[in-house]
Length: 352
Image (tube, rainbow, N blue to C red; front, side, top):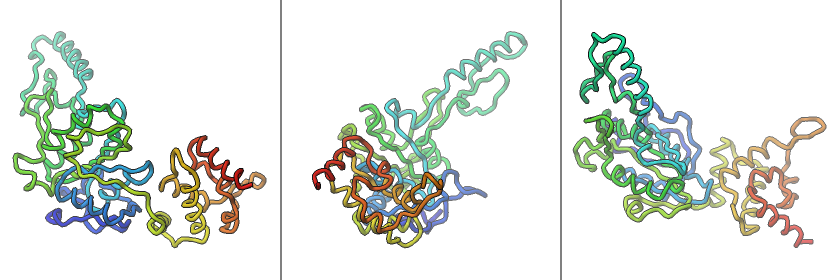
């Protein structure tokens, strides 16, 4: 692992250039094994590498489906890092990314042990072990057994105990309560936390050293946002920022080649032109994204089902070329609300 400082992200959907990180006799868990067919433009790859160098969180914005989430998979695969995924909900709390403590199970165990102790009075009474005492007896409840680390907690523990860096994805942070980003500030700065229910149990990725000295083994944190809520300025100050623009035509061609592992067919070339024309045809409430485009291509490649024969028939490039935008096959993969569907229909009505 002495090449950690040299690992750089290219983002061209190629095979991994680096060995996956290893512990004695085994590869670290959670390292993506499957190549991610992700194409990042030069500026995005540069932003990732700057975040790697500084070990600062990288905040990504962009229209839904532009590849914000998949970037984390691509970076983890290419660098050979484990990937820790945190998917945020409206009810998420920052502490849950670090750990949860099962007080209910602990209460059940205390009651059960108390019952056993009552039946066998000659044994010692129930007691809490010391923080550095890992031994257990039938009458001892070790608080640590009720701690379950969250994904960010796992990443900090990996760095703190085994000097293993990782990629942490905090996906759609804007879904959470407005206090959520603020509650993460100190953790993102210090990369340390303590389990308040267990005296003396603490994880520190810096191990008391400076971030500069430890940066090659610290987690790389990638955060995505769809701008549903404004993020606090103090939070933004701690992040690098990149807005992922929609790919241009040449980049879309490269994305197609990477996803399908073949040269672009005449059908896909027509589909690409139709898709770009479709995106500019109306004022969308929800523009079709790259991910939806790939799904549309998959269905075009499969063909349309003949209800009489129950088999799939090929769609030719000539047929697709002659098809109006509002009648494109599998339009349900691209148009996601009634307003946009009606707007496309009006285009054809205006042409008559």
